[in-house]
Each structure stands twice: as C-alpha cells, then as structure tokens.
Length: 179
Ligand code: 5GP
Image (cartoon, rainbow, N blue to C red):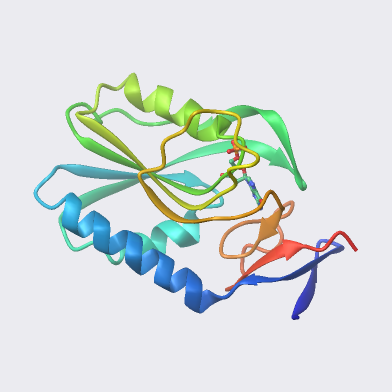
C-alpha cells in the first residue's frame, strides 16, 4: 500500500485519480442531462473544492455561471463544529438554479450554512453536489443530489483536500493511518 507523509502525519492511498475521474465524469453526465436549458450558477465552496470544481465545470456542456464562497470549519484534522463565512455569496442568485459544489460532507454543518445563505437569495432551485460523503459523521439531515461516493468516517487529503494547507496538490486521495 502506497503511504505518504503530509504535515508530519502518515496517510495511505485510498482513492486513485482514475476512480476520482470516473466519479467526476458520472456527476457531470447527470448534470448535463438534468439541467440543460436552465439558468445555472455553480457555487463552489473554497478552499477544498477548487480542483473538483475545476474538473467538474470543464465537463459541463451548457452555458452556465461559476462563483465561489469561502467557508471554514476544520483546523488540522478536526472539525471545529462552528462554520465561519470568510468570503460571502454575492447577489444575483434570484430565480436561478444554484448548484452548490462541496468537496466532502462530514458533519453537514457547512452545507447547512450555505443552503441557508443561498435560500435567502430566493433562487428558483437549489441542488447539491459532493465528491465525498461521510454518513457516519453527518449530524444534519442533508440531501446530496449528486454524489461521488460515501466514505468511512476517516480523515482524507488530496485532490484539493488539505491537512492545515498541505496535501491539496496530491492527484489521488489518501486517508490517515493513525500511525
Ligand atoms: P462539515 O461542515 O460537513 O463538517 O465539513 C465540511 C468541510 O470540512 C469540507 O468542505 C472540508 O473542507 C472539511 N472536511 C471534512 N472532512 C474532511 C476530511 O476528511 N479531510 C479534509 N481535508 N477536510 C475535511
């Protein structure tokens, strides 16, 4: 098993880039099918989603807008339980189809907070996309409309996901070994 060190912690290979690519293709195919003809704004949640959003959006075949919001709930490998908005949502979402792009849904607090902020802007429809979901960690009743895959409640890095800023550049996704 391939292992790496990032920010002094040991991680092992978990999801290879080829599988991630299939997950992204699968989500894009569904979005292209379901949302054609709608006025769509993709709303990526920074920082973790920057690679996933970039890959996904380049596979979208209809005219769309893209924007980002920056939230933070993680410090190192632990969630802080409170979600801060660091760069807010602009205006102009009214009457549009908003597709929120999240890298990973853990407790669900970030997505819950974003959903509230987006709802306040009175869009016509809100949809959620997540590459990864940890059902055993989720404490909110969150609907993910387009999901890559579920994972166990373990800390992962790579493909945009970080450990204190490190590991975002890894093409594959790695999980912490605890060793
Ligand atoms: P939630 O608010 O659902 O608990 O967490 C959402 C955010 O926490 C994600 O957007 C991501 O930035 C971060 N996060 C949650 N789980 C992980 C994980 O396993 N690894 C990393 N690197 N970040 C995570």
